Length: 213
Image (cartoon, rainbow, N blue to C red):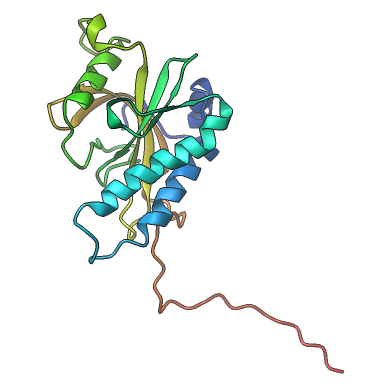
């Protein structure tokens, strides 16, 4: 059974997003933009460029959609993020592994992160959840914002997995624990987002009516 901190029913996810001043349409917009751009990557591109492109376009998509809706651009720590000054929320894009969006899996970031991620997860734990170790609050490590990550798995082959998650645990390289995970795309439902179409695949058949003179 999934953890109680995992929210995957669509109506419950939408309710949780509303509390954060977010919506499914905006997050999916960012994911679709990233998946579309990732679809042009081939084996001839530089190693790791696909992941960096996904990260950058996720951030671009978030900004395009949410800046007109009261969010602000956030370049702190060289991250392509957005923040909400009133709600004290920050949303940062992140490449997750293949368990992104899995209600029963435990995803993490695909590449090792550094000190920023450590501070992010530590600061997030200042908002304590039952069942988690009571944190030591250090005001010098916390700017007052709660940081969430828009974690995606996009590889042009498999269905996209995506979630908005609140990291509260970090082992020095990878996120190890999340206070809450909001599932957006499970990676099992073939929504067509991020799938590369085979050039040899059949095209749709369209009936065209022809009137005789």
